Length: 149
Image (cartoon, rainbow, N blue to C red; front, side, top):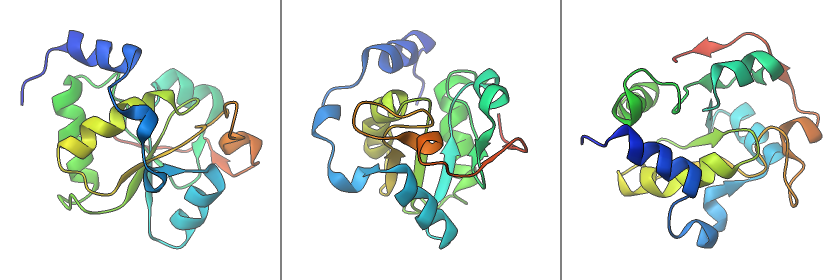
């Protein structure tokens, strides 16, 4: 599974086909993600850049795994993601980014690679036109990170 870095950047910046038609199960509002995480049914992965983590902190209980700044690119990100999930491709997890755009673009690729219960926090940390986001919902943030890169 060797994908060139240029493809990854294009994929993140330009988007992936079919994102607009994502089903409801793939999109979680911040508060729903927080509640599922608190009940032990969801791992939240903050995939923003390290500078973004430093600027705002990360959602409490989330782990950090940057796609854009991973030293091994997409392959390394996927490898580390599998490790976080203990190789269980059906374990539920939700990606979060700044506004939900990056996570929505990556989600179809993860689904295609076999991550059956991959979701994303729509609205991300800061929110968008339809979602208040993690900060808008006043959900807890932590400056302490479980750093995976």
